[in-house]
Image (cartoon, rainbow, N blue to C red; front, side, top):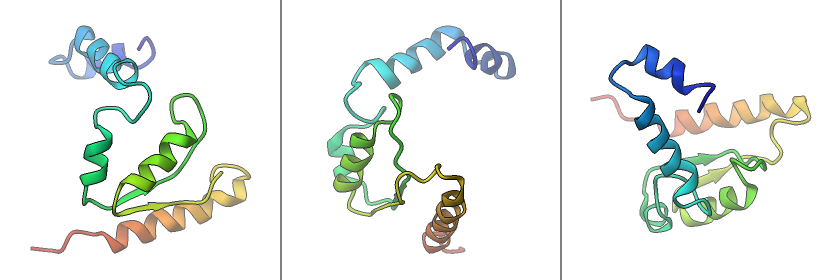
Length: 108
């Protein structure tokens, strides 16, 4: 909150510190056992393709990433850990690019 919210409100004057606090509350404190802003039922019904790059830190627990992958009908999961060793990052980037190419919206 102290690191990013003041800069955010300076760049976007229509966003207040109170709004930033409400956002953080909703994001991390309201339902801390699952992903922020959506329910398990939403994830279960989401038809949008999702690429999950699991992590295992307090803000992004591995168990939630794997549960999301199991719930979302069109989920793909990258290798884990993908950040370390550093040699794995290019593989993760290749998978991200492939996922984005495969799910690019059709030109209208």
